[in-house]
Amino acid sequence: MGSPATAGPPVSALAASMQAGVNGATVDAAGAEHSRAGPGARIVSLVPSITELLFALSLDAQIVGRTGFCIHPRERVHRVPKVGGTKAVKIDAVRALRPTHVIVNIDENEAHTVDELRRFVPHVVVTHPLAPHDNLTLYRLLGAIFDREREAETLCAALQARLDAVAARAWPEQHVLYVIWREPWMTVARDTYIAAMLGLVNWQTQPVRYGGAAGAARYPTFDFDAPWLADVDRVLLSSEPYRFTLAHADALRHDPRLAGKRVGLIDGEFVSWYGSRAIAGIEYLMNFASA
Image (tube, rainbow, N blue to C red):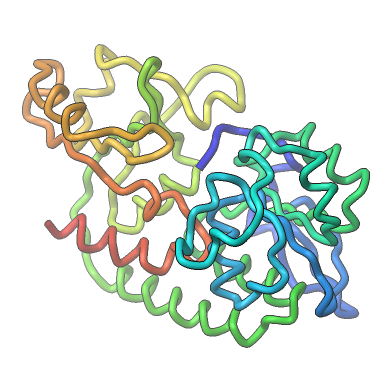
């Protein structure tokens, strides 16, 4: 996951973005239309979860660049050259790879980076899934662009099975604080992908409302003296982007302001990574919530 950026307008998945279009074209989350790529496509992914998805779509031979945070699948991604980080992209390194397509995300990548890339990359594909079911559209978008419709539909079937399984169970409501950073402490708003994932098991993120600037409101700061913490049942310390440890959890368990609340670690990759990781992520959440 990443801090807010503006690679394009935040388009809702319900607004028919990222859909297969007419005449063999596809439309991404910024409303840009992309023709179908040929077998010579050269893809740079600046989004860790998308890089993993591209491998799941059997596009190994076309992936020519990635960020240093693109670490999955571990046994295959190591051969792909790095081009910096999600927020510190080395533009010259990307240019040297001569990509036909660069895949970005509205939350993960900076707007000025995307603008620079558009000057020399024929296709900058913008993604912005906001909820687990948006992955169905994401699979089909990339499957259509890169001629991997069959692989995309296989992923769709697997994800839909997980979505059906989690929906078939009654989950007791829990109010949760999902912590992504410290110094300052930061959490997630309810319009984020993370909050939507947690909602599958009826875990409702707190607080309900946020102040501040629009971007900051999606990943707001907080302190443990906030009155709304009285409504929190469970505090979840994510493994990313800040790598919380058992020591952090133990310290918070002994904080009198959190008396009576469950405090524990949660694997952020399973909760915040969309793409193919969402399939395993839903199963992980079901097991986690059942424990």
